[in-house]
Image 1 (tube, helix red, strand yellow):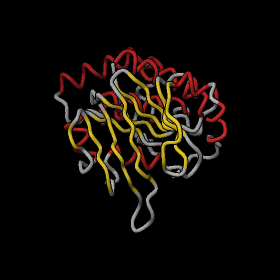
Image 2 (image 1 turned 60 degrees about the vertical axis):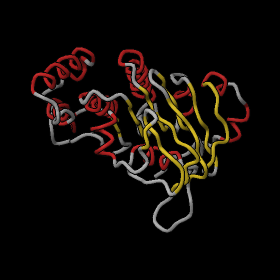
Image 3 (image 1 turned 45 degrees about the horizontal axis):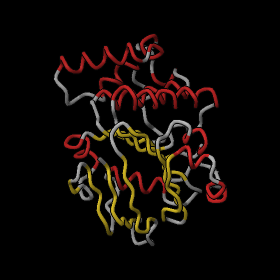
Image 4 (image 1 turned 180 degrees about the vertical axis):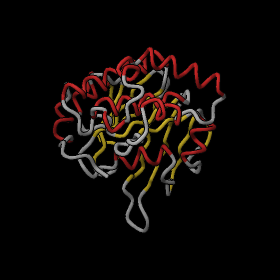
Length: 240
């Protein structure tokens, strides 16, 4: 469903941050991008999303060239949903208003049906539907950002550090929600994450980047027990 072929990318006049990256992710699959700070994880996600155009190589969605398609067109034509790491909800708006913002392009009936379905799926949000997002916990805001992305009915979900800043309990709740989305909505989920072992526990496959290149790729369960991953994955704060 998503495929990058020999992608090189960087910012402005700077050097390539991504160097010949080839990867793929399919429907009903969680694929996680791991690696130390500065390895290019977020840059890869931004390139797939359409915020950054590759200097070389291809980004394909369903076999179609998409490397030059900006994010708003990917949302409309390819069914891509993107959840950024920060500023991913409108804090001064209510839960209901946030969700409806994710479905502005839909007709009224479809919007109402998806809203009702999400209220059933996420009872915590349903109970706080009239509260402003600023009054929610960090984990609740992250789940709200996921639910808002689902309002548009995406086929592909791109997640940038969904556990950033969360307590261990909230992190597990968010990862449980991501796993349910894969299983219940048949989505292709591509996720950048710093919490390697927690992310791998819900993932199907993973790519470990190092210095802008793919250093390891394997089923998630194999990487969990791979000593090479421990040497390459150094942890740290989320990258920009």
